[in-house]
Structures are given as C-alpha cells and as structure tokens.
Amino acid sequence: MYRADYHVHTHFSHDSNEPIELQIEEAIRQGFDEIAITDHFEKGPINGIIQPNMLMSGYLEAVKEMQERYKGRIKIKQGIEIGYEERWREEIFKFIEDCDLDFIICSTHKCENVDLFLNNFFDSRTQIQAYTKYFENVLNAVKTFPHFSVYGHIDYINRYGSFAHKILTVSDYKDLIYQILKELIESGRGIEINTSGIRYGVGHFNPQIEVLKMYLDMGGQIITIGSDSHYTQHIGYLWDEAALLIKNIGFNYYTTFEKGKPIFHHL
Ligand SMILES: [Zn+2]
Ligand SMILES: [Zn+2]
Picture (cartoon, rainbow, N blue to C red):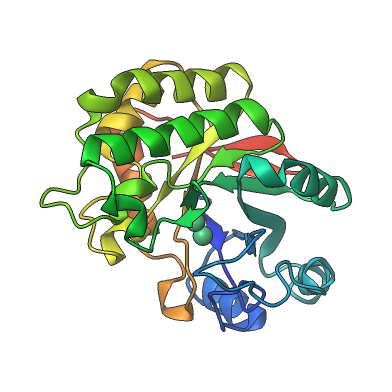
C-alpha cells in the first residue's frame, strides 16, 4: 500500500528543533513513499511572544533542495500549516500567493486572540461556550479562507481545557460540525485524520470517529493521514492504524496533494 505521512514539522516551525533531513530520513527508514512537510505559518504572538521568523526564511528553498536530494527515495511535498485567524487574512493570502505550495492545512490554534494551549481561553467559559466558540471560528475560517486543502485536527479543542470530561460530545455541536463539513465537501476541500491525539492523551485520533463517519455519510472523500510529528520519533506515528481505522469506517481512499490537486490512493 502507498503510504504518505501528510503532517510533518521540522526546525522551520517555532515549536520543533528537528532538522528537516532527519525527519525525511526517518520517513525513508520506515518505508514511506511520500511525506508533506507542513511547517507552521502563524501570525501574531504565541504565548505572548512574537516568535522569531515565522515563517521562516529559507523554508521553501530548503524543501526544494530536499526534493532534489532525496529524489527517487521518497516523494516530498511542499506543504504548510496555516494557523488561521481572520484578522491576518490579507497577510496569509499574500503569503500563499507568493509560494508554490502542494498542500495547505488550515488549523485553528487560537480563539479570540488566545492560544488554546494556554488554558485562559477556558477560564471565563463553560465547556459548551468554549467548544461552540471554537467551532464558530472553524466555520468562519472555512468560509473566509478558500485556498486550503484540508482542515487540520478539526476537533483540536478537546485537547485543552481543564474539564472533567474533555472529549467532544458530537451531538452537542452537531449543527456546527455539519455546516463545517458541508462547506468543505461542497468546495472540494477535505479533512485530515491526525494521529497526535493519542500522544497528547486525548484518547482518540482527531477527529474522533463520529465526525469521520458524519463526513463520510455526507459524501466527504478527501482525507489525508498525518502524524503531526515535531520529533523524529513521531514520524509515521500510528499511521497504519489510522489508515485501517478509516478503511473500516468505510473510506475506500485517502488523499495526497500536488499543487493543490487531490490524488486518491486505495486504502
Ligand atoms: Zn496544528
Ligand atoms: Zn501541526
């Protein structure tokens, strides 16, 4: 089976120190046919600090160089993970226009200017209020940012917050999730299955099974499989298990991308 890890960070991300060569060589060692390097593009401060050089001079050139260096051993795609906030829309659009990207993940890492990994977003909200606000942000991103390929870890909200039961009760947010998935499907965009939820102790891949099933039932076909690795030891993390899971749910294909166009691979 063709195997492609479609969510990989390297030292060009503010939260990874892993050299790009080591990430690629680990993917080769594990027999992957393809990877997408998807380093972070974030505007504004993270944890109150303007991170140096996001994004990251030399990133695009480095991926091109890697494509040449590892030609014939692994296919390397030029991707990016955009931490989308509508207030940076113009800057993001301009940045994307100037790049020659194969693949764009859109993610919501912040709500109301607050990083979700900092728990203060949750301080003044009930769980329902916090999760609803998050999904409203996701829906807004889907409506106002047409260029991306897949939505990243679409139920990311349940990684954070100090609630007794963090896992999303899908039925509580069904209308919003339905609207998000409908917009994605109708516009030819997709979702990813992101295996990192297990590593972070969430207890499931993102999104959880109910959302994957809803997406499939609604006619969704575009789905990438990614480890969200920031470290070499997480390359390919539970990739085969995630592929098997979506196959068992009823997906026949998963997706890779070339210059923004989906390519389907049998599961
Ligand atoms: Zn992310
Ligand atoms: Zn990521």
